[in-house]
Image 1 (spheres, rainbow, N blue to C red):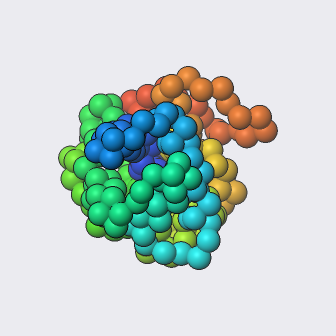
Image 2 (image 1 turned 60 degrees about the vertical axis):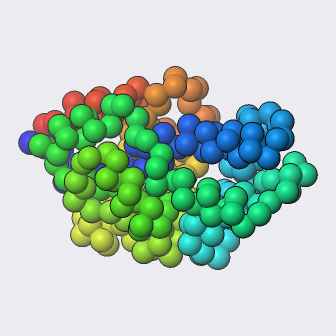
Length: 222
């Protein structure tokens, strides 16, 4: 038996290896353009621009990808074309999951229902789920909620879609600013998936901290 009716997950960065997917795309793009830029710098710049864009009025995530890439390349004086943005949007559904994801989720499904709460479009997420090879009981997207994390409104929307009291949900995520803070605000129990051993930010207390997805199962068992 599980302590929770649902375990919900952030997708990109938690289940899908988001950083590797982005960095691989940027690296190939720069090589194709014959431009030499520090990959860490351009990656950080893109992340900051993307985060600022998702806090404005809602627009599809494929548009966010295009706009954020255009603005990032402009910051570095690199020529942008619409084909670059289209290629970025097309690459996201191909990014791979972390190795521990498929076996851990398959095992978890034996104890509780699982769902994703994701800052993306429905069609992108469906392709990512196919790569994981696991059937989720629900998928909640920014496209459906018409708002992006870190707004608590997408978590409130998820509670409505799952028809569940927040106390019945454990939310697992790698990111504090996107997930753990707003999930806690709406009353969910939170679990920080800290694969890389990062120091915990000051003043933020997730209910649980785990180093791998396999560690979720012991947390939920009665």
